Image (cartoon, rainbow, N blue to C red; front, side, top):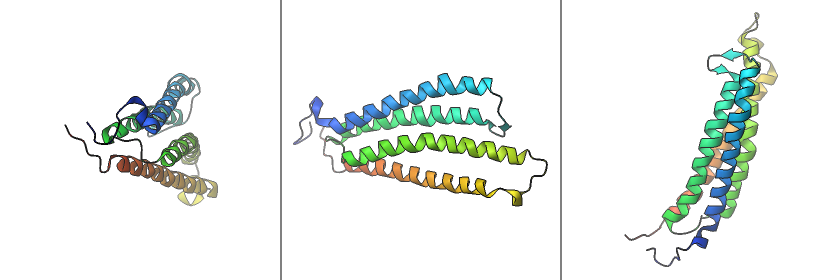
Length: 173
């Protein structure tokens, strides 16, 4: 039993709320990735590179990161308070992580697919040279770098929130 903490169902409201939110949004990404993106990738022929077509790459990112990754995050938000014996450290950090991830992730998938399409068009050009890379593509690479750094920051917010939830928890068996 955990000292000084009532372990009833209503104790972990923030963890339950954001756990459910992440799991529900993961199911939406699963449906989008498997019932919408895969058939489009099969119907519309896209350029193919070393990693397959751009549609396949986007499909796998939506399924693996959107479905599996967000499902794991939801499970973490649900389980961490129970392991720590108290609710999540911060509702605000949980909210920043949830909304930031759900705004950034679809934007990142679209941007990376756009970069892949542009890059493959340039590579397949008969007059390709590295010095001929358009400044727009360089700008897109810079934007992708910013998105990755913000994504890393969002995961840091989540890790700090979970760490503070688990920190100092005293459980006895």
